[in-house]
Structures are given as structure tokens and as C-alpha cells.
Image (tube, rainbow, N blue to C red; front, side, top):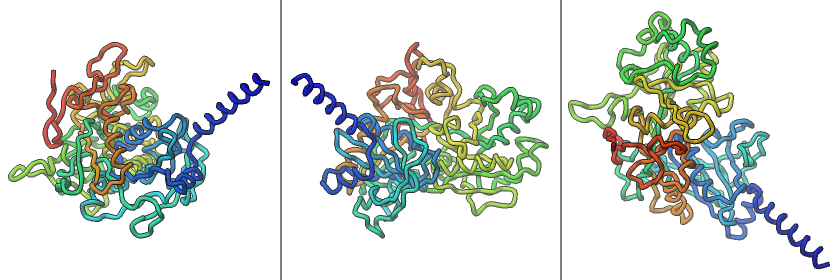
Length: 475
């Protein structure tokens, strides 16, 4: 009898463990709210490092407890970073149900804007009231909920958090022209975000042919089906600057780059809105705006209002919108170009967002590299997209910021620095996501050298917290 009771007790323990390990449901979130035990906060700002921010949050979650929510209707766009501009992540943390709303519409400035100029942002409605549907596809190990409703909680309170606790920005607030010190605490994340020039597939192939890499598009399709970085075409900084600068006189067609193959072909510039950190990063890097002053003032950037019949500029609120549009442009055999962070990987994106490819910038590819420190045989350049940035060969890398508002709720005030620390000084060097490098000033023990069996993670240089400054290397 005692043996039978012991067996039943062990079985009950395993059953209880399996319940605790299950992904959090909206009903559990509602029950925790009623019980007064729910931890809930809201993060806003940059869309470029979305997956990386999610990863920092996930590190504190109990195993197998995460659920993902979004207002997207797709059953296949289930990876954080491809969920759209409004998402939420829920899990148990030490057994306590916890929710983070994540709004990335309109980009980095919105990490600061609600606390500077009173901008009101949307987020998902509190999750037990959001009328979400379970998606048929899911991010591995998670349950995905789609088609959740949105709310502007300042205008229509729903009983959940009314204002973001803060968030993350690709660049410091000063690049938007603001001092935010009176509204909260801005901190270096000690993380570098690598950016790349992304183009539609037809433009990629046309560039390969124009640059003599392949004799024809058909030959390129046959010989380079995997789009190897070694075979990628090149765009120079001067060429891209000439495309994106307002009134440069360059935006007529693609002939300056593609010769006769580009004559009469319209330029589609898929840029981000002016509040985007990706856009601010591009402006600073290519146009020296707002970094250069006086007689050396930076160049203004072309916007949607500058569009013509042959130069079509679209301003997108999130990176996902850029990916979707580049994909659509390619389907229509159009030549489109823009900037994306290297956290975005076309190989793992859904079919509606994977029609873009990264080109070389000044003859260096952001995914180049042959070192394999992860032991799976895949070159780290392709898998992690940071080897050339680490070595100082690829310069389009910007250092992130975190921001905690003075009005932040207790959970958010604790969580944002936790995510920042997880990004900049991770306990496991293998947890550093694709496209990110660690700043050597952040104190991480992760390697910057090509040591057998070790990932290259820490950059060999830094901008010392000033994204207008050139990177300096430490040899």
C-alpha cells in the first residue's frame, strides 16, 4: 500500500510539473490579475532588435512557459521580430505569471516619446480580453496567439498598464535632437547592432550581372541558389548616399549602377519613418545627419513627399513592413532597396517576408566570415552575421541604448535593466543573438578572437557611446 501511495505521489508530482511547464494561457493571465499576482509591463521603441529584446526577456522565464501574442493574422509569421508591430510575451518567472507588451510601431523614438511629448501609443488589449486566436503555426517550444485586438490605453483604459515603462533605441536620444535626462534614465546597452543594405531579389541578381559575377540572371539563379555572401554584389557608401539624399539629382533610374540594364527602371526606396532608430542610424552613417554641423552639415534624407514617378519612397513604421514590401516589390520584378538590421534573416523568415537579400557595403558583406566556433559546420558569418563587424571590417554598426522612465512600474523598472544586462553581458556567450556584438567596455568575458571552439561575440572596437563618432579598435 505504501509503495502504491508513493507511486501515486510521484505521478502527481510529474503531472503538476507538466502543468507548470505549459505555456501561459489568457485564462491564467486573467486569474493572476484577479488574484493580484500578475506582473505586467510595457516596452516600446526600436523594432530592429525585437528578437534580441524578446530573447533577453525569455532568459528569465521558467522553461516551456512562454506564449507569444500579436495582432497579426498570419499563421506562419510566428517568430518574434516577424509578429508585426504589436506583440506581447507571457510566461511564468519563478512561478509568477508575467506579461510584457511590446510596441515597435514607428521605431526607436517611441522609447522616449510618451515621456517627453506625451505621445500616446497603442498596444495589445489586455490579453484575457484581446480575443486572440491560436495560430496553427508556432515558434518552436511556444504557443502563438494571433489576431489580438489593439487598444490605446490612454484614450480607452482596459485595466492594464497605461504607459510604457521605457524601452530600447537603436541610437541615443540626442540623435533625435532631445535631452531626455529629466524624464528618465538612458543607459548604454553595451551592445552593437549591425545593419545591412537589403535589396529585392531581382535587384540583387541584376547587380550580380552588372558587376560581372555571373553572365546572366539565369546563370546566377543556377550557380548561386543559396545566395552565398561570397558571391554577393556590392553597393558603395557613396552610391547609397546618392540614392537616399534629398535633391541629389541621382534618383532617376538605376543606370548609374546598372548601366543600360538599369535605364528606365524605377528606384523604390523602402526607408523607415523619421522616428525610427534604423532610419536615424542610416542618416548618421551615410548622411552625417545630425552629426555634422556648420559648413560641414549633413545631408537631408529623402522622404515620401519627395517621390516621383521614377523614385518612389515609402516610409515604414517597422522592420517587418520593410521586409514585406521588399518581398512584394521582388514578386513584381521591381528594384527596391532599404536598410535592415542583421537580426533579420531571410532564411528563417516567412514566405511573405523573405524576399530580400543583403549586399556587400564597400566590398564587405555583413554575413561574411568562415570561422566556425559553434561546432555545427555552419560558418559563423552566415549564422550570426557579426564576424566582419567584430573585426572592424564592416563599419555599419550602431550602439544601442535602453531607457527607463521615471514613471515606470516596478516590474518594468526591473525588467528593462535585466534585458539590457542579458544583452550586454550574457551568462552564456552562445545566447548573443544574430546581428549583435558585445561592446568591449561592457565587461563581458565572451571572446573576440577566433579561438577554436569559441564563438566570436565581443567586438574589437567601440564608438564610446557616441554613434556620431567613428569606431576605434583595441588591438
